Amino acid sequence: MNRRELIKTGMGAGALTLLGCSKNQPGGAIVDYDILDEAASSPVLKRELFPDPVIIESMELLHFERNYMIRVRSAEGAIGYGVSNNLHSYYLYPILIQRVIPLLIGKDARDLDNLVEDVYTDGMNYKLQGLALWIPLATAEIAILDMLGRIAGKSITELIGERHHNRVALYQANSYRGIPAGESVGYIKENVANSKAKALKIRLGAEMGKNVDSLPGRTEELIPLVRETFGDEMVLYADANGCYDRDKGIEVGRLLEEYKYAFYEEPCRYDWLVETKEVADALDIPIAGGEQDGSMWRFRWMIANGCIQVVQPDLFYFGGFVRCTRVARMAAAANLEVVSHISGFGLGNIYNLLFVASLPNAGLYHEFKGNPYIPVESTTSSLQSKDGEIAVPTGPGSGLIIDPDFIDKHEIATSNKRYW
Image 1 (tube, rainbow, N blue to C red):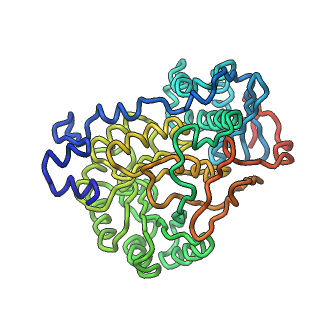
Image 2: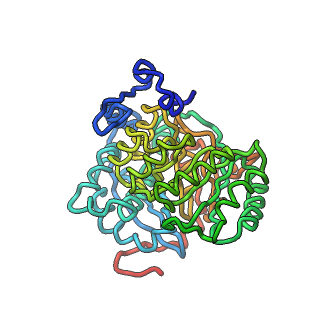
Image 3: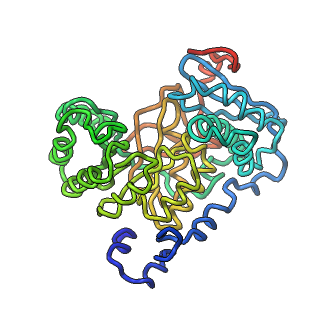
């Protein structure tokens, strides 16, 4: 039995204790908060790999067309790059320039765990929690980790944990909403044929749709049609993107159970924690969530209280590798899987591979939204899907080589100039 089945069958306090669970935690929690706090509190960056200080001498935000990336340089001349989430950076870059970079210049990069927290708590930065702060901070953190990895001759994966996976199996993501079910399936078939993915995720309802489908009856038609089209061997996931209230969420969830879907993502609005937990309690299908969350304490509550069973931090939306690793450790302490979310243009898919490779509790399949928009290569990975899997880069830092000619096209961005 998995943990969810074990708890639901009520096998007794002894069995629950083996999983660090208790029925008597504050607010009805089923996992001991102390266990989660202990898991999340240990350092993430392996500081022992760096005997000497690594002082951040400069950080520059580079811009060219739709791409934003940071170039960081140490006092000793080491360089690292971090490509941002370019879906959002065109309007967030002033925060990166004004509220993140100045707080990192002159600091010892070996203190990254503390620097991440210091940026959050400096002045009124905490009021920016969410995409506004975490995407800029994640971009800076990725650049720093890339630089540190090149100094130590270690992959980012090995800077934040151990390498548990050399290849990552993919699920084919898609964004098809607002078109008939049959048309959606046609596009999904084309994508799966290209990626050879053994799992896929469909979109239900309408994003934040107040129980209203993107087309009348589309969801009820799509759920069985996808199973019929791809057969029992295909692993199927479904994402409602916060469309439903409690009752409708349960109704759709039961249809997903009938057709043996493997998880049900964001049935209710992401900040409707009680309603999401009520859906989780009413169903057997695992509930996935966390993509939109920017708060460590919200993840802590969701994990402790059985609100979600598949934990989905986003490297950019949640502020980078250090913070996402802390969430993954809490999930592991609760015997839950992590299937991290990733979004945006750029190199997010590849950075996500480096994160997933470090997770002992990684799920079986992970999000894939196509190949990079940026000219990049790796000496240790083709960066392409082969039979539904991608080899994780193992070279120093990100293990990536961004085309130098592409970098040369960039200019140094300033916060008083508009780039769109």
